[in-house]
Image (cartoon, rainbow, N blue to C red):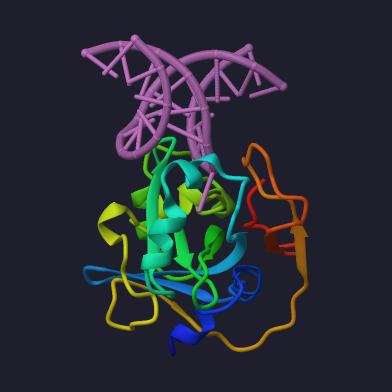
Length: 193
DNA sequence: AGGAAGATCTACT
DNA sequence: GTAGATCTTCCTA
């Protein structure tokens, strides 16, 4: 398996958000390997007025200092959210991973999300806060290099596959930009509701 | 020092 | 569909 390169992330976040669909996120956890296919993303762009959180935290200033292809992880509403830093040179931006389809390590994921009714798999990782919990992703992983196969968290390339990309407005954003910035694999069961 | 609000989730009706 | 839990940062005093 091969990780996505720095160049992959050094582009318009909207393009990166679309291209991250169907890629694989890999989490090394002790002796276990947890992985899932990315099925839903959201782009956050330069001068993004939509997110109060981003502006309040001066995240864009922060993102500008951070290398593309690194993870940016922070907490909202008591949930950790996972972003990949992605923007053209001298710009700022990122991509929020909103949902994945579980592949390897499903039993460990179940354990990580204990106390929850997990009768069906779709409830395991179909939301930004759910997938971080299932994959044991928290603030201690902030800044890890997603392009480095030695990292505890990385994103790998996958064989080309035919699928249809659907888009919509972003979710949970108080005042969204006019253009659709949320992308997901059409018809996939693991997309959030 | 205290309160409000946010890129959310669960459990309940 | 709505309420309450959750935790961190920002704003006001």
